[in-house]
Structures are given as structure tokens and as C-alpha cells.
Image 1 (cartoon, rainbow, N blue to C red):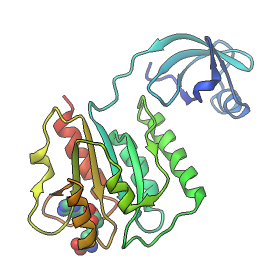
Image 2 (tube, helix red, strand yellow):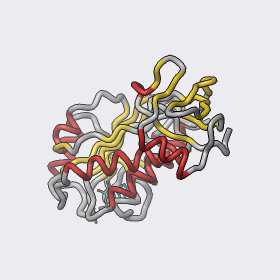
Image 3 (cartoon, rainbow, N blue to C red):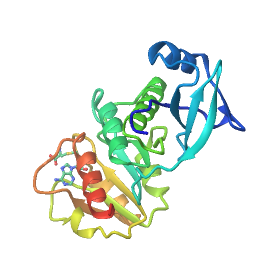
Image 4 (cartoon, rainbow, N blue to C red):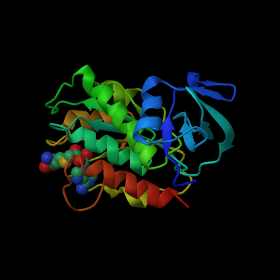
Length: 235
Ligand code: SAH
């Protein structure tokens, strides 16, 4: 299956075993990928389902549902303080490849950027592309940018961590077990968290953790956190 091309559809495009293609998808399949009628490709709904499909005129015919095993056994939500410039694009792309379930862009005390609505669309597009590229079954959810206090107070995850570059904190790797099911982990901006922000997180049962002895950039820290979690949780 791996050499077949993949496209993501909206769940409403699937009607019984027919997929109604958008003009853009039709263009992509026929003109860009040069598929012909009868050629097969993979269709994903971004919600965990994959199907094998073949191209017909303005539609595609679904032949079978496929089983995908590319998801982590743990649901990870990243709260990421928005970094400078276009740094968040790379965070979204790499974290999608690494298996994140949900990313919440957070406006913290030291966040420099208040993003435009176009940014959110762009991040969601990047997440969809990266999910397709890395053969994920799910496209991670990218939430609208939110205030730090809302992000911290609204979580329901049982395992809650906040990454802090300075001080004596337990190494994240040593706290994880294979049975962790739902994890939320917060990463600060270039200037780090303020004491007030750390205290608020602690009051909502977030445990301050270290990602190792070096000070990582705001765009590197999420990748390290996700790699440590997947190393502990993936069989
Ligand atoms: N300017 C700050 C560092 C900010 S690094 C300082 O000098 O202290 C950006 C964010 O990445 C931090 O807020 C933290 O969440 C995370 N981070 C970077 N290195 C880390 C480490 N070694 N352990 C835990 N978190 C780290």
C-alpha cells in the first residue's frame, strides 16, 4: 500500500461507497498525480479511517477499509506558547510527524506574537499535509490561540507536565510509564515562563519537568518532549 498516493477528504464527501471529489482533488489526482480512471489511491478522513479507492469520472469508488497502525498508544496534547516569526509552522509539522493529537497555541506573558486568523488556517493545512506525509490515521487538532490561563485550567488529562528549562526538576523520561493514556504537556516561549505562570500550572496539578540539562529553543523543546513520550509509550 505504501507506494499509493493519499488524499484527505471531509467525512461528508463519502456517500455509501462513493467519494464525491472536490474540483481541487480531481485536479490533483488527474493533472498533478496523472492518475487515470481505475487507478487506485488511498483516501483518509483525518479522523482515523483509511480506505482504498479507485478513480472514476468526478468520483472515486471505495473498495475496502484499511487498517492503519501509525498512531501512538497515548493521546498527547501540547500547549505551546507561540514562538517568534514562523517558528510555529515547524512545531506543527514536526509534532504531527511525531504523533501529537492536539496542539493548543497559547498566548503567554512573554509571547511576542498575536497571530492573524490566516495563521490558524495555515497551521491546520500544515498539520493535514504532515499527517498525510507521515501516514498518520488522524490529523491532529489545532485549536484556536488561547489565553494561557484558559489552556491550563481547561484540561482533563490525568498526566499534566509543564517543561521548565531552569531549576531542579525531574527528567520527563523518568516519570513516564507505558500505561499513560492521556498526557498534556506545556512548553514555554523563548523568554521562558514567568513565576506566576508556573505557579498557576502547579495549582492545576501540572508537574514541572526537565527535558535534560541543556537549554533548548522554544521550537526544539516540543520535539524532545514528544520523542521522550513516544520512546516510553510505544511498544
Ligand atoms: N529563555 C529561557 C529558556 C526558554 S526555552 C531561559 O533562559 O530560561 C523555551 C521553553 O522550552 C521553556 O519555557 C521550556 O518550556 C522549554 N525548555 C527548553 N529547554 C528545556 C529543558 N532543558 N527542560 C525543560 N524545558 C525546557
